[in-house]
Amino acid sequence: MKKNDERYERVIDLYLEGESIVNINKITGVSRPTIYKLLEDDEYKAVIDKRLQEIRTQGQNRLQNKLNTYVNELENIALTSENENTRKDCLVYLINRILGTPTNKTQDVTENKEQTTINDNDLDYMIDEIDNEISEDNVINLESKKLNNN
Image 1 (cartoon, rainbow, N blue to C red):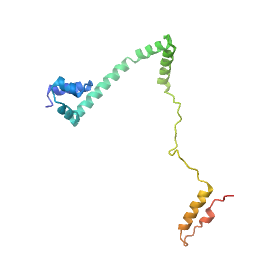
Image 2 (image 1 turned 90 degrees about the vertical axis):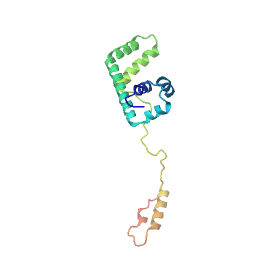
Image 3 (image 1 turned 120 degrees about the vertical axis):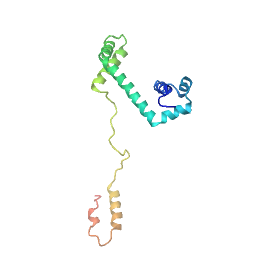
Image 4 (image 1 turned 180 degrees about the vertical axis):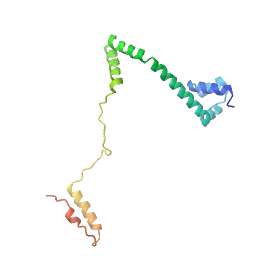
């Protein structure tokens, strides 16, 4: 398939619309292996990414242009709905959008959840092990560093 082929544009359009490869094949006549190759080709990927970004930007602009209408409608539902749950859900949503969504979970900031406690006997044992490995020429006396169990 050549870059200037109109089918190329149609393949991208259909792909961006969410059509399956099988349907794109049926609609355009482009073979499935060729479609897969196109979707893997860096040049075509760049075109698809650019078009996706354009679609997102257009959608975001459209929503932003009507944001006041949406908020007013949501506020109207929140204040006038006969269903109490609907009113509550709308109000909670509006408040959370302004203040942020609260969480009930406390963040665990410890890296190791299985922290162990070292008692005096463990420390004495570790010091003895180190002391046994140190040569007689060493000037540090680890015996004076031992914790007292009393």
